[in-house]
Length: 364
Image 1: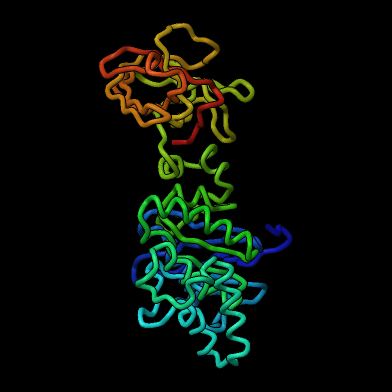
Image 2: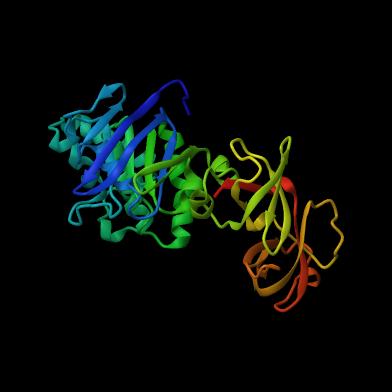
């Protein structure tokens, strides 16, 4: 990935659909050569953002700059981008090679140039051996790769992907997440991917943006956003997060104590802008929790008795639903490395423990 410049910049972009603000003063810079995902639930503004980049819609305010050029008034076919749709939009009566060649033929390129470019694009997506097949003779993953080849053959500076794996079954989707990231690294161009699938975004992206109600909530690497969410919405949207409401009791250096009704005092890392008396959420990821039959603190700063409401065996881990002393329900994911002897059962009492650094403090 080249950090030397930006392929795409949005500066204060706003787009309204009637009375609805679909994109609200969005400012975002996407680096040259990175795989960047825009993630959010339905209605978050992510698809509108992609359509604005593609030129299918025009912003009501703000600027869009792609490859250093202002895009105001530039139609889709004049932009250095290509969009791959969720349904692939392949021509069913055309072979793989003809589907890939179609855009070049529409541009009026000579056959002598079209042939090598189609061959190169099919080689890129590893479909050279299936160039004479029809789309109906391909698997879902292969059809998706034809759609990618058709976009890549135009040599765009930026490839726009609209829910690219949404039409695939789960197993194929997992394989294609790895394949798509590997493809992006091979061709070395900027990919901008819109998705509502958190796992997909975390797996493929160099960086990602989380949007909600048209607003940008956070931008960062997958690890940054998962381990240090900037808001309760991000914490709950990216993966699973347990939370408790409380009030900051005191702060000493980097350490905060939080009073939680029905629980007592919880320890968490202090964050800027949160002072004593501030209402906060303490959030902890399920895989950060530890479950024990032993009451000893064992070096864990946070410690409470719980009851196991449900235990779900999931192969390499057991997922527990736990009832806290204040009747809140939390989820824990505990590895099964120690075998069946250590596992807990529904109805059993246990002690839930976690370290200060394993919690995240968020203003409520």
